[in-house]
Length: 195
Image 1 (tube, rainbow, N blue to C red):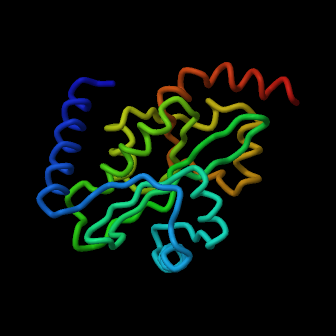
Image 2: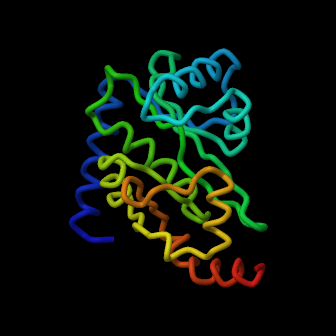
């Protein structure tokens, strides 16, 4: 990772952690959320234009991979989930349903949640597909590398299309974590042999 980005990321993450401490916020990793809270999160994903709708069933499925919650006095004020896709026999994880309550935005808490999840899945294939420039910047801060569709095997592209994840590269960017980047050629060769 670029040393300037690494310093910036460490500074921003430490500031976000200090903000959490000062505000009485706690980041918690869990596999359990009540049905009531899942319904609220599902409704949120339905009504916020920057989020993709996730039904309660989809959230329950993602919860098997775990999620990070930002908590304040027992209330959920932020969340991020790991969405698992299966490509051939491999699991590819995608960060999903990132949200931080309006009162706590502008303090890099979204980046903090992304950082926790990215570290949790550092030895897995992790991909980020996003349109927002802030997310692109955060991906770069987290050491993820921008890739284009030409970097991916036809099987992976076809799978992304089937999953509804194939996006217009003029509007969306794909980022992969260092583990995925280190294995991408090998991954593509294995998938190409399946054709």
